[in-house]
Amino acid sequence: MNAQRIPAAPGLAETVFLGLGGNMGDRLEHLRRALIDLRTHPEIEVAQVSRVYESEFVGDGTQQPYLNACAEVRTRLAPRVLLTVLKSVESRHGRPEGSHLQPRPLDLDILLFGDRVADEDALTLPHPRLRERAFVLEPLAEIAAGRKFPDSSETVAAACAKIRRKGGPWVRLCENMDLSSEVSDGS
Image (cartoon, rainbow, N blue to C red; front, side):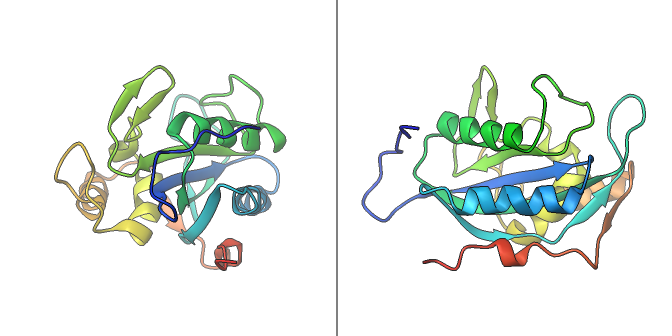
């Protein structure tokens, strides 16, 4: 694949926060393998990963609980190119096209892409429902609590505190699940 690069000085890349989730099959293994796919991509560096959380499905109907995590990555890929990479990873892990709000082994979302704000077909930055989802805000606050949303002065920690006060679907930390070994060692 010919990747488009973000115009940047040599050595500089954008900081991007991704949401990872899934509720089919070996949920933790799907998250691990997705991080390996991202880590081994020549234009993506996985800088840090949150702990793993389990959450109740948010939407109509019932589904099995999801495992969720967030990752900080650095890349020179343009936002749409990164989105294409993420969709390709989802597909390789068995996610059928058109499975939005359906059970799926893997769901990868761009949550924040540097300080960019965009509202385009198939790509909205920051992620349009980010501030409404405890299952995203809990792990994101773990790795980016002080980060401000580029479309407001609100921090991730403040948004997470708001969603905790509201209550809603359950989200719990999975103490015995770890993805930290999937973080790039910088080599």
